[in-house]
Length: 487
Ligand SMILES: Cc1ncc(COP(=O)(O)O)c(C=O)c1O
Image (cartoon, rainbow, N blue to C red):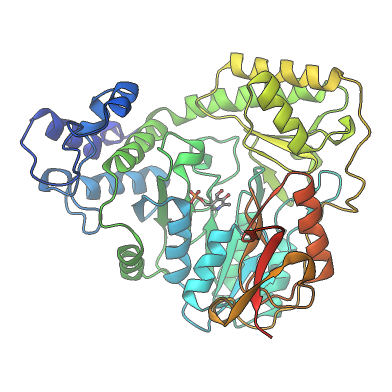
């Protein structure tokens, strides 16, 4: 039974009502409801959007100290997501991850971090001054991707670091592989460890039973979700949710004050208000359609010779669950890298995928997709697979496995701020990184400040770059250079 109030959209309604009142504005933003905006911009998007691009005013409340419609919109979000408190974020899950780490960890605290974390978790760690204790996720050799952490790996990490205060997980991962959060949370609770979940790719989980359980439903203390990645939020709009007594609510509020803009976009916040209403009132139906479309597409892709789109049955039994709306399509049997397949789909078929890696392309199916879109994708994949197989150029890479188990010399924050210099990546062996280096996407740190740069890391980064991956965290001059501590 959907509570009647979930149909309400207090923030959006207040914006529309203020826009329609046609009051004279002598305040920011300077375009004054679009009157001063560039004509080309207005012609393309239409005039209305600018009339709700407002600033903090009594009628539309204040994100930094909500007492009116933003407070109400956040309370409705908390109710819809089963949280005690929800916060609107206007700098994506990135700012949410920073707030999540900073509101639970203090300088010097030991924290457990699954090494499939996005770089924003690591930047939160740098800001906090905490000492991360990394533990590895499972790597799938066949697919060449990191899956997630198992209950056993998490338990082992908790055992080895009894002083750790909190456990930071990323679930689901980019490919939709979710950790067994229920088991991990119950183990962590038994030991008095807080559980933080970067749930950037799971804002829809709570609203459909055939998706993995959401972090909060699994008992996590705090989580952050990119509403914009999967649901109807505009780009950069995310939410942070708290549940239970173990997180200091005032500290989260304080941190968000510190980190978020004092000029939050009302368009982004309104999109969160509407996306919540949409999920609370018709999420099951909308997501059901996306799930069905994705299941059908997965079956059809798996009938194409040379392609493989894994389902839950492929995953180690009982260890993980899968968000079936993510289609990871392995193209390696075609003799193509994922990067090449992605480029062909884009250039020849006008199809843009979310991400490519060495062996795969990643397709997100969402509430915005229609059967025609998936038919087109499947048709293009048929075409791709039907071409004569080319000799693979992936042989120069021994494994797509990112190097793990680096030697740590000093905490990330100390390394980040220590005197450092740029060195060609190829010559950095044995030096200590002072930056986060990732392959982006997915943005999982290959190097963290304070870690020794190993030969295998250099080989991994350069090989992937030679196949078309983008290395993030290097200076691209004549050759990629990374920042390392001065000797
Ligand atoms: C797992 C994960 N966490 C956090 C982020 C950052 O999210 P946002 O882009 O909303 O800032 C990303 C972005 O891709 C991500 O994949």
